Amino acid sequence: MANVIVVGTQWGDEGKGKVVDILSESFDAVVRYQGGNNAGHTIVVAEEKVVLHLVPSGILRMGKICILGNGVVIDLPALTHEIGQLRKLKVRVEDTLYIGKSAHLVLPYHKILDVERERHGSQKIGTTGRGIGPAYADKMARVGVRIGDLYDPVAFRERLAAVLAEKQAQAGLESLLHTLDATTLFREQMQHFEQVKRFLVDASEVVNRFIAEGRRILFEGAQGTLLDVDLGTYPYVTSSSATAGGACTGTGVGPTHIDGVVGVMKAYTTRVGEGPFPTELTDATGQLLRDRGQEYGATTGRPRRCGWLDALALRYAVRVNGLSTLALTKLDVLDTLPHIRVCTAYQHRGNRLSAFPNETGILAECTPVYEEQPGWEESTIGALKLEQLPKACRAYLDRLQELTGVDISLISTGPRRDQTILVDTPAFRGWGLHR
Ligand code: GDP
Ligand code: IMO
Ligand code: MG
Image 1 (spheres, rainbow, N blue to C red):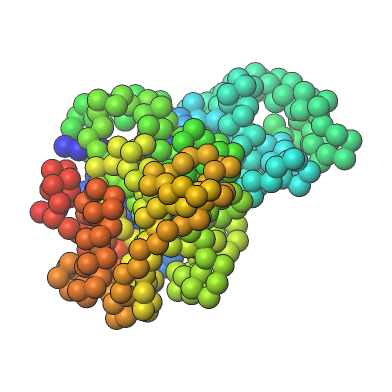
Image 2: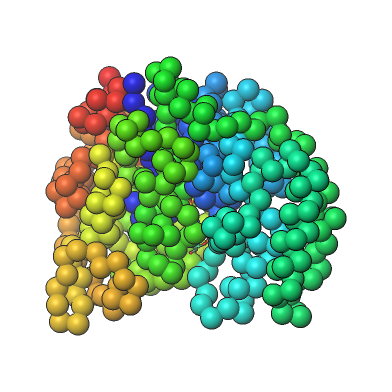
C-alpha cells in the first residue's frame, strides 16, 4: 500500500504526463490536485499522442479511477471537449472519471481578465491565457463559483449576475467584459454542467475511503516547483500550489497518508513565458534542445525557452517538496551532444552562490557556473536497463544523483511507454513499483 505524489521539479513540461501514465499501472486511482487547462500533459501510447489538460494522466489505463480534486480549477467547455476527445479515442470515462464538487470554475470573464491584464497590465507574465490567475484570485477573494454550486441553478444565476456586474463596473470602457451577458453565460455553463454532473463526487470523501480500503493513490501535480505561487519564481509563476504540499489541500487528504514524493526532472531545463532563467541558452545548443526535444508548448504551441540543467534549482525542488526519489526524462535528447553542462553554482555580484536564491531580482542577475561532462554520442532511445546505457551516460546519471542527493528511480529515453527504465531503488522497491 503506497500513496505517492508526482511533482514537476522545474518550470513545468518535465514529462509528468508520461511518468504518471507509467506509474498509474501500479496504482488504483490518480488524483489531480491543482491547476487547470493551463497544463498540457502528453502521453504517447503506441504511435498515438494524447494531450490531456484537465483529466488525470491515468485515464488511458483501463479501469483506473481518475479524480479531479478540489484544488483544480475547471473550465467547463474545455472539460466537456476533453471528455469528447477521449470518447472518440474509445477511452471509457463513464465509470472511472470523478470530479470533486468543490473544484472552482474558470468562467469566461476570467479568461478576458487574464488576456487583458497581460496586454495592458504593468507586468507581463506570459500566461497561457486560460483565465487561471483570475479564477484562483476569485476563489481566494471568496467570490468564486464551485462546480457543485450549479446543482442550484437559481443561486448560481444570481451569483453569476452579481459577480459579472461587479467586474464590469471595475473594468475600463474598452474591456471585452462589457460584451458578456449573465443570462447567456448562465445558459452556456448549465449546458456543459448537464454533461458532466453525473461525475460529481465529494472527492475528499472518495479518496479517503479508497485509502482506508487499502487502495493505492497517485497524486498528479501540474506545472512545476518553480511555478508554484508560494515557492516558485514569483511573480512569474502560476496561481496554484504545484509543489507536493498542494496535494493535501488540493484533495482533502492528510499528510499522514502520503508515503512519498517523486520529482520529475527533464535532462535539461525549459521554461515558457516570462521570468528569470539563469541557464537559458539562446544559441545553437538551445535550438538543438528545442528541436530534438520538440519543445513547443502542449497547450499554447509557444516555443519553450531551453537551457542546461540547474543543480541549484533541483536541490531547491528536493527541499521544498521533500522528494523521495527522481524520475529523469528526455535523456535521449542529449544523445548527440559532445559535451553536457550542469550548473553547479551561480555568480552574483562577485559572490559565488551554491543555493538557489528564490528572489526574482537576484535570480535575474545570476550567471551560471558550469561543470562540463563528456557526452556519450550514441543513442539511448528505448534502453530497458541501466546496463544498456553508455558509460559516459551512466557517469552523468551518477553525477546528477550526487548533486541532488536523491536516487533516480525512473529513466525515460523516449516519449513512448516502452522507452522507460525502472531502477531498483529503495523508494520504488518500498512502494512495490520495482519487482
Ligand atoms: P508535462 O506537462 O510535464 O506532462 O510534459 P509535456 O507533455 O508538456 O512535455 C513533455 C514532452 O516530452 C511530451 O511531448 C512528451 O511526449 C515528451 N517526452 C516525455 N518523455 C520523453 C522522453 O524521455 N524522450 C523524449 N524524446 N520525449 C519525451
Ligand atoms: P504543465 O502541467 C509550463 C506557465 C505559463 C506562464 C505561467 C503563468 O504542462 O507542466 P498561467 O496561465 O498558469 O497563469 O501562466 O506559468 N505555465 C506553464 N508552463 N507547463 C505548464 O503546465 C504550465 N502552466 C502554466 O507559461 O509562464
Ligand atoms: Mg506540459
